[in-house]
Length: 382
Image (tube, rainbow, N blue to C red):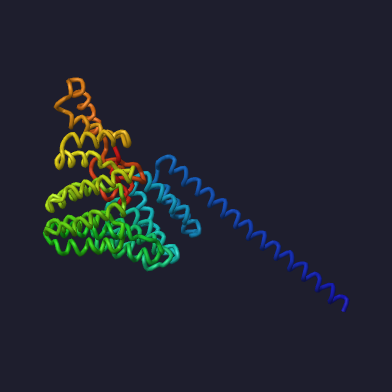
């Protein structure tokens, strides 16, 4: 019995020794694999530093195939290529990843998304659209794919598709895109107007306004359409909405209001309305327009009197320009030179500025050309 117990302890000791040896061997093997991985990784980085991107891509692809958990590094590499403008390198990297039979299914959608971004930046919008639609099947990346699809449809002026995608994004992300969707309806409305289909143009503008009650553009479209049909009272109602939608756009509708009130032989009412606005809001200057109307309806002395008062309250370049213009017959050469300088300053002033990025332009763009913000461009108060 005693010899059996001793033999039992010998077996346990031997098993412990063997197990320890196997664990040490496994740990050493893992360490060697990690060292080899690190060596290959730095070799790939060295290729990148030496502008040998093709060799670097091949090294990184071999690395990721041995450990797909490192895919973030490779997707970052693709993003670097894209930011540097080396779209062909980014496309090659992402296409090579997709072509790997060992690519785990959970990583495929991410690679598809990155490849779609490559195609979009390269201008291959049809290919990008196809990939983003495929990504939509994965709920984890739905919002990002919809964002890119919306950008593509905007670029291609496919406004109906843009509306569909924007509404879907709004539901998925629970994010309010009503302002943007209203602009898409206005784009469609402008298209129909250019085709001569005024009825459809009006219907689409109404949809835009129902989507966003503060859509200035929709109100302007509907006001213009009402003028074309001779419905001046209706047009006035649409143009007057601008005060409550976004008051800085008031100067855009003044010329249309003048047309409406002239056709109703009621310019005196318009003068009263515009004067109330000019006194109420500091962010807009309607003084030059009011001065012209007073001069037309009443007389020059009344116009000069109003202008003098307003220039003390709200001095502005356009007010000075109007003051010189209305007194042109009585000014000398030196003052005439001043008028030329003011005229040039007014000419050099950008008429509109984006409230988000600061981009300036002399033409109103409903979509900012710089930061691509809808309704970001606002009239500048001189």
